Image 1 (cartoon, one colour):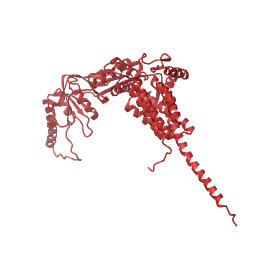
Image 2 (tube, helix red, strand yellow; image 1 turned 180 degrees about the horizontal axis):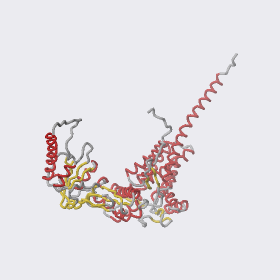
Image 3 (cartoon, one colour; image 1 turned 30 degrees about the vertical axis):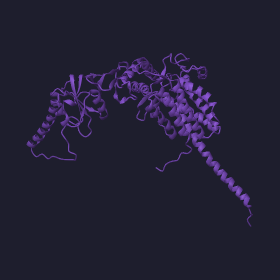
Image 4 (cartoon, helix red, strand yellow; image 1 turned 90 degrees about the vertical axis):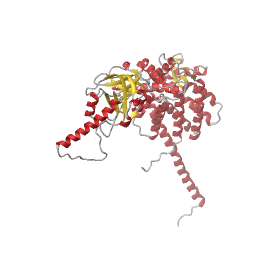
Length: 540
């Protein structure tokens, strides 16, 4: 006979097993959160060594054997093969910073890594993720106010100041030794395409950068006019035209094709002659109409359905002394129509003298080797657009120069968006850390811990700058903290002299938007990582 188990004991055992089951379930969110934080910190540590002017470069090899050498955070993360979904969030974070500010892509990832580290310590103390996440949000809002207070307004007419800002951005790049040339180039390019009075953004598509291998970066130049990265079609046509009238067409100068498959059956030579004569007549009519409008330089949009221009048409155009340039990309049409003052024409019937742009000189310029570009100067009414010819001795240098110049242009764009600047060299981060620590005393409960952890995390930026420059990080950061506590808010890490100095006297400055955006984006990213407590695979 089975022993009788008292009801109370059975209930106790059931509740114990239920508790065990609950306990197991409770354990899972913690391990998911930890694995997320570890993955994201691994990505942050990978780019940490490339922060600052003395940061190291990374060599990235792609699957097809292409090699890229860079220390631009967004480029490194973009080309890295990242599998963990949370690590991908940091890649997206650096992309977001690249779009918003253009510079500070490494800083934002290093900050996110530091905040995650701080969050992990707080979680181990038993503070709830939601509390940490909300405290970080309020700390980031407070940090933005501190940045606003320590920023100083900037006048866009002050070229020397803008040059210093662009130089600061270029100092951490491979091409930093050419910053004397690239910084003023970036400043002049942006100033030419804005009305400094009322513009609040810059359309960087209106700055056309054309990269050509050969010579050194020093041979790069800013051209007040257009550069076209194509050769003339030759065939005896002129390669230099003064007092040029430029037409931009979006139709083809080649025999028309039917929309569907077709066959023409020719039974004798007379019919064949008639077909060829018809084609010749058709092309001649188009060329005559172009000449009648007074056009002597013709730009033709790239066509994928049929030839943009065929040999016979080129022969006619050369006879009429019209320079012909084909394969203008569709996305460049707006740029060329704005800078040359010509109107894109999609149909031959609308091609007349009013659609043409005027320039003093259009010529084909050799760029070393067999490379050539077409240079248009003396444009009558240059719209808000400029061109830059960028040179480099090899592919790696050329591409890095392009990325560096893009960052410098973005820094000037940030100043147009928000006309305020901050000292560089880790000064803003340290100032926020010192002030947040004091403000943390006014907070209650766990929020006080979180604010203090947020402040400590931001100190990783000056710490890393000192570490990458080969200085003693603990000694440097302590000295910097001491200076900021005594009210020297513009003091930062001077990596050239190897100690803490006033950054404004050293001309190391950066736009307010870069740092403000970095702190905001990093804290938002960390909040979303902390809120995740499970990873579920989708069905498909």
